[in-house]
Image 1 (tube, helix red, strand yellow):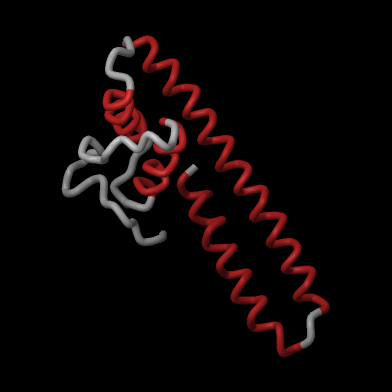
Image 2 (cartoon, rainbow, N blue to C red; image 1 turned 120 degrees about the vertical axis):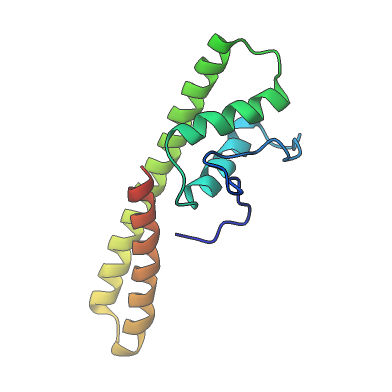
Length: 132
């Protein structure tokens, strides 16, 4: 897993994202995508943490949403986030196949660099698989 630039858990069993400033230059989904990525870098992360973090951020931006509206918007975000992760998996898988093909015909002096690139891709693929 990668280093987490912001630890949203801070010793708690769930993420705490209240103190983040509301960035008006990005939408709630983009902001939550980033928070979810960061939370997943923490070994304490469980699936329910996404809903907690989303609710905290939603209340900062849209404090008047009803519970029903929140659950609808959260479900839409969850589908959006899953689709983004599936797209990244597909992109990495394609990139991995291209590097394997390149390495198969590459001169010996390029073999180590291409193998290192495959390892980077493999680590990210593994991380995405674990977190899904």
